[in-house]
Image 1 (cartoon, one colour):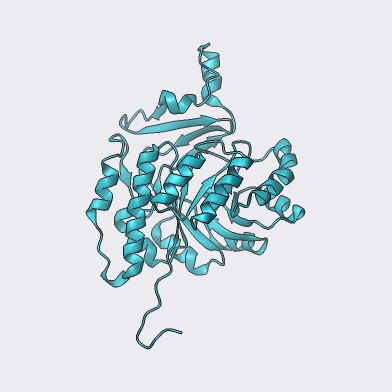
Image 2 (tube, rainbow, N blue to C red):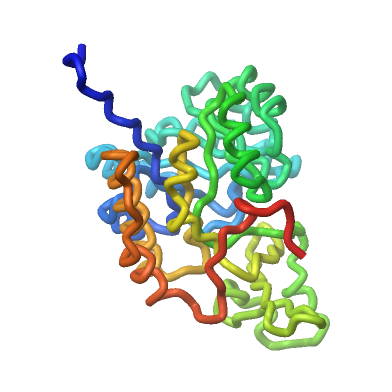
Length: 319
């Protein structure tokens, strides 16, 4: 029991960030992340690196020793061939000791139930997770968390949280995906052009390919392409650091940093800044004050061609 007049400390949301390797995982957790997401290209979308089951087992053990968690992206758009591989992979994840899986395809949920493994299920349906009724539907079938669509504004996020039976996760920093095709469009184009490097892996990260609008030449949309297909990414980066207190006031459960297509130094800096802001706010919400140095540290490493924005948090839509 608490003494008369004492206040119950505010529960801190989980600070979650993507990682592409065990080294990145360690550095990000040391910087202040509570959890990381990783995975294999065979089963996960838009991964910064391919992390095997044996590596996941090693990573989960290390993370647990340091009070952190490891989640695995199993959010591919599954083919029949991939579905056939799911049971063994799910069993492997349980054996690795990971803390949960991100899924969008019901085949993943069914594989978890059929194998009888004990894994937390995080529903991540990209742009379609826009209402709490659907989220609660998946909650009744075993999901414990929902990753909200990035297109929701702050009012919609808070309304979602107040009516959802699942833990609510929102992205508060980084690049976002705006288009996905299972086809490797860049590779197909280069092969059509008979380019010698058409088959090069990681070609889009190293080549710096973009789509550019005819009417807005300064808007550049990065193209990320891997074995899961082609992904057109946003021209700017979400950055809710200045207004994080408004998100925290809504009691959102999980704050996600997307580290894709960013350097490790950048992601470590971002994690440190959000860690400082979260800790300061939850220690004393009524007297919280934003520290400009938190954002300055990110600005120093931010690509000058990529604007830091509030995403959709304070507006309905963007042209």
